Image (cartoon, rainbow, N blue to C red; front, side, top):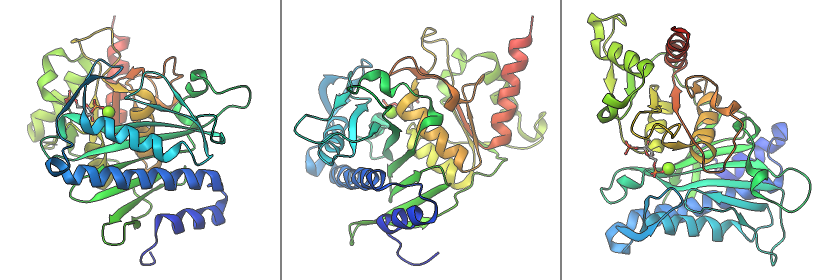
Length: 338
Ligand code: AHM
Ligand code: MG
């Protein structure tokens, strides 16, 4: 890999190679990256910037918003509304879609994001991140919420930026996964890894174990077997990690493998899961698949789910391929029981 390939150069060269990044999409991705840089700056300031703590407001999911949730949402909207590359945006923090105002030209893309994922970690100085997904606006009349209801397999770009010990932007446009580290002195994202691959096998799982008593049978079976370690049916010991920031957990899996699970559980049985399909599960699923991993809701590939609602939730199992396939088999065996 040549030294010091900036995000801009990477995108330009990708376009030259296979035409996968038209100029409007490149502009979009550069603007998202710039917004992430600005969010990273706010996150780094922490208490010095007066950005910690709750904002005394609730989002559409009925969750208390943190000040940084709102700041990150505003940064992404302000950065993206004027460039002419977008028709509309949708966010975890906004009930309705945000249509680009009339004073700006409308573009052909739709941007969805979770501006600051892992909100419970903001105030305790643990990694958090921004997740985003890009769709093409279907041809036709004025943009509407229905235009967003496309399956994950329709995404044209997806990624996240993790604000941890380093700020790292991770991106796919459907030609593998690349990682860019923020060079704080230069103020630019620099390519630090290409062709990211998730090992097919793993001995590490990520799940919130405090929900164990609420799990369904396949989840319980899988984790029970992992916990039995070398003495059990798996014949090997497993390690566990749970950061409670999906970006940080997925970043670890893209780096060294593993399986991440946030399954449906009996706490709120009417909800299919905790995580949101359109701006959490879909972009992460695409990144994982592009790196050779797999992603399912237990019954179906997540990216094949036809969304019915912008903020719909989904059960998530993703990561190292052989573990995801094993879990899928456990779900099938459970469903086949009389
Ligand atoms: P958020 O978007 O409100 O931050 O919620 C999503 C987060 C994920 O990042 C993480 O995997 C999960 O919620 C953690 O949930 P829990 O606190 O139940 O372990
Ligand atoms: Mg989130």
